[in-house]
Length: 309
Ligand code: NAD
Image 1 (tube, rainbow, N blue to C red):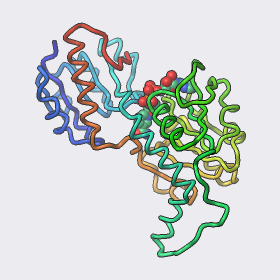
Image 2: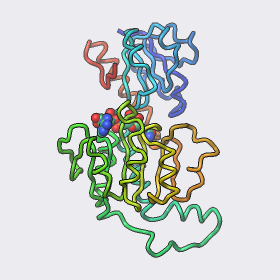
Image 3: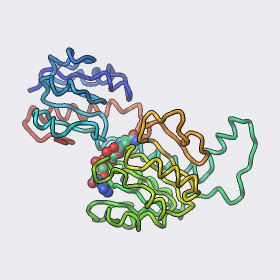
């Protein structure tokens, strides 16, 4: 039975810690905002965005990450210390799905260019053959978990033919053909859009690089909402410079925040969003629901939801 849950101030990236604390006011354990290692002393559970070494020295039983991706946490050391780690996977399908079809619509309807022109007060009709519509276009979604399925469902509803890459090639709703990771290049070779939605792991790191851009169509767009590191940013810039691709929409980068000097900022055919594809005013409620459910499960001695280690 938990007695005190800490809400780490790092959650501030996505919502004020106080709104989550208040949303959890009905759970049995006390919920408090914690900032320093000393504040952790009384806590047996912690809800956090960032990872800090001090978490290992505290007497925690459970850490909940408010992100879906948990690549920043040291799984082995948490396991050795007997600290359970849970993630927030399952809550971003609609927000990230909408962001990705938003990118597709921007590119198809040239909205990103109109906005750039507006800033300069330039009334400029696009080249006649640049705008297109989405029905009949094609998308490959790499990774068919929460994000991937959220993207696929929305793109399918807009008339896009959606294929996908999945570790076990069983049929998935809204996906006309499922490929295995070994067939990645075949899967992305003949589509207008490639959306990347896999976690950052040893297997996926750098998995979208020069070879992949080489097989993609020259009129194709890369859409990356996964994690920096899955896509090779410097190979992507080379491909954009050499017109091997039509453009890219990027929410995540190898270095975040994206450095001022990055060429991604300057390119008209690149849409940069600040790791905000999942941003949503309801975010804290969804995290709150996951935390509440796991408080119940811990109490009932059941397996935790979204248990990582
Ligand atoms: P999820 O666990 O629901 O889905 C991930 C899927 O990827 C799983 O189905 C898994 O089997 C699959 N996968 C793993 N390795 C693969 C490979 N080599 N090839 C194909 N599929 C593979 O996670 P999710 O919520 O969909 O999030 C996916 C990742 O996206 C997260 O790990 C996180 O890094 C990132 N993310 C980013 C944002 C954002 O704001 N941009 C928001 C949420 C998640």
